[in-house]
Length: 273
Image (cartoon, rainbow, N blue to C red; front, side, top):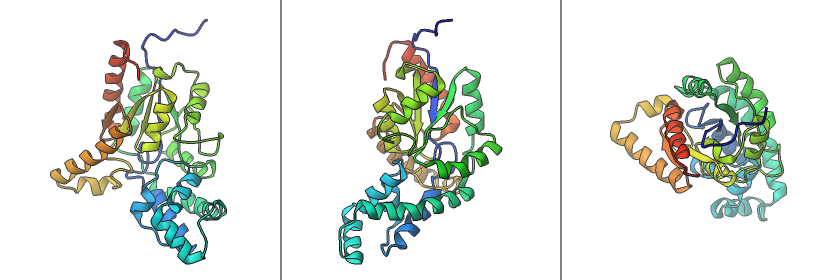
């Protein structure tokens, strides 16, 4: 049979991992980034570590190391500029640290399993991309599967010539899932590079504001906030993700089916991402 022609029907949702489906607040990488730089005599704070979140992890290390404050601290500690060999050395220390830390931050974000089941019931494929490497995902993916989450494919940082914010990982998803055109796919992410990945590929994009990196809080910490504090956090995170080009921004994956329905209606009306 010839493939079904595209008539505005959505065919797939491609999900990020940490901060989107697992690890509320995207906390697993944070301590690893801080500890890895500390081993090389440079102290970074959590804000510096979170800044480039969503990039492939080597690129993330490079982005942190080349920020003015960290670059200055590196020169003071080592008597030379931060270079690619230094990023390689930090990455070699960081990767096993992050692989270990994901075991402690593999919680499924509340509402994720039901939301994904609802999307599957509509006939949508569930793809995934991540800034984590294969080595890190070799630890995280089996834990997530045991807890009820196993997407139809997995594309990791390092699988292709370039990761986020390039569209290459999304292109691999299209091929793996057998879906096209790009306008038939929704990319869901909690980071600016992840939203940029979807836009570069020509997809619809949904940002998640309160469960991910922009908020940086566990589910318990978020629930403990006063309503006004939560509203202010939502406003800041939404501004970041909408500023990156997200077509919609939601609190968490729990309400993703409603967001996808909204985008499906826009697509059926002839709107393009």
